[in-house]
Image (cartoon, rainbow, N blue to C red; front, side, top):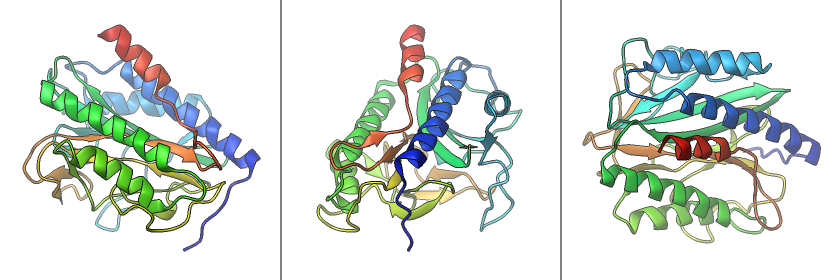
Length: 266
């Protein structure tokens, strides 16, 4: 395992990449409504990313189980946890939730963030799942400080969600990030306090809780990409890229514009 500690200049370049991911998610937030296809959302994202001189990293991303990923964003609806493939047939419906994961390369560095959106009027228990998942992301970030351990992040996420009766997906993790989208270390959403790698200032990681309303077990769909819950109950996914500091972590990505748009829409 090789950990690349980033310089301040590198962290600033990563901030630019991640801020652009936040702007892309905000552009999508403006268009999420019943009737729009996931393929249309993908086209909007790719155009926005390329217009801003960046490259959608997910497009063509290799798959050990099959063909490379064919789109610029992942669009995972309801019981789909992650890696949902956009198409021109699947339309969003009132009451759906959709998790959009977006990754880009800008000025030689990657940005990565995800957000789960409500489509129209969503069931209260599903909205509660989304709130708890987003809260757990920030609990994990709070625990991510130099001198603490990797397990502290997972423990914070796990404790927050499982104490509310939700399931933590264990087969999928967060990750290091930098010049490559996936670098060491893996960042699980579960763990024991004080366990795992020592966190150091300059480490850049993506923390991304994937949380289920029911059973935590998941399976791979026939497209060899999409991961969904085995009991067909909803799942939520939120992700930030951060830089580890001596004190509070530096959140390089942003939900600010997305949340502003959501506030207007509701």
